Length: 289
Length: 281
Image 1 (cartoon, helix red, strand yellow):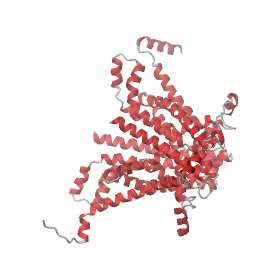
Image 2: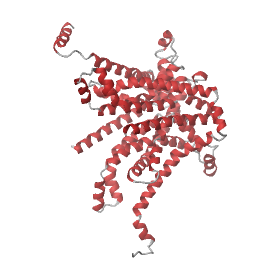
Image 3: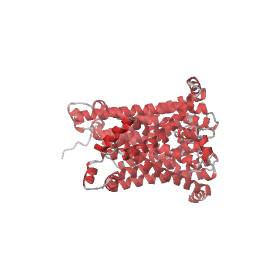
Image 4: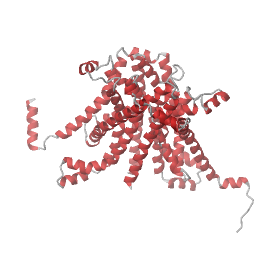
């Protein structure tokens, strides 16, 4: 201890003064992160596991909870597949073609980012609800409903995550070198061959990254889903809505258990996306070098 | 001028094949975007005005609605203010400092994106609720957090955490630190350098970060619903009002408030886009 102070003092005499400013600003940043993010996270982990892992597993596999988790995962999967195809196509059309109204289309794509998700839910209920024109027509003709059904969940998720997929693919398409496609065409490649061999490969990583991030986002969605799908256990109750219900009925263990599963899935998807993004950046750096 | 008047359909199609394919793709995208985004927006607008403009204004005239607008506005402003300060500090430390655990911070910043708003509100309830981990703190200080404004502010802070930091980090990384060194060489002290050189360069990142945080805070629902409990009367925010109005089947009030909230956050985002485009010119 004494020798430590002696060396610090000794250093102080010769070298620059210790960077108190740097250290204090760093500790402000780290304590802010700790208070805002780490402590809440630790609390929920502790609360869910306080009766042991066996009890955690039992809470997750309760029929209602298990159904809610499965519903969340499959609707999110369907959304991601549709979104990836339509989002990539939209980005492609925006980058490659000139047409009347392109600027407006480009602006419309960002609208879901600015609209609160609860409002999104309200909009979809008005459009497709059973009492409204389209909803009642579908119900009568095909006995088919969108609101209070899984399809409503999928549409709400599509609406929310559409811009992020388009915007993650668009810059990559802009950077593509047209000369490569022209060369391929000159060498006799058809448009499908050009698409599969030239356009698609550099798009793969950004598309997968965008898909993973929208999946992570979809798992936690609440505001629009609670309006669109309602809260019917074993039918349209998603994981987030289940947690809400268990909190209301003061079932702490159940709420914490399903919350932990949701966080674990979403967080690992996000980490995977970050890892892929870093990898694609590294590989493009190498190509430049 | 030799031009064959009669072209076989097959030949004509072969000539225009590429064009048709591209028109097909453009058509698909326009229809998809219209159905997915424009149709719901139009439906909300028409339904709000179904009983005329008078009904919309009379629903805004309800004291509950005005109070909820007001609450949402000041909660969002506090959240934006706190994140403007601490978000800048976090982004600064992340970009400029090298220390062990820095990669961990990178993952942590995005964590709220992976946490459902409901879970975010629930986390705070576990801390500050009746049997919460900090229940004794709540009792001794007498500061109510759960089912009160402080909890709603904390919940909104959690949910909006990444926006400011994520907007600022790339701007800070792109900033050329030689400008600061030049200022220091010319005799500016640390604060002068920050306010005169660094801060103006970060301006657009800050403006966009503020916009995104603000828009997200205005529309926050799940987290506020859980931590606010059955927030009625005085603590009503706009999203909570819409939710309750729907449950009580006051459709015109719910629709027109939802429309107002949507339009306001849209104008906010569009306005800052416009500012940025003007600033870049």
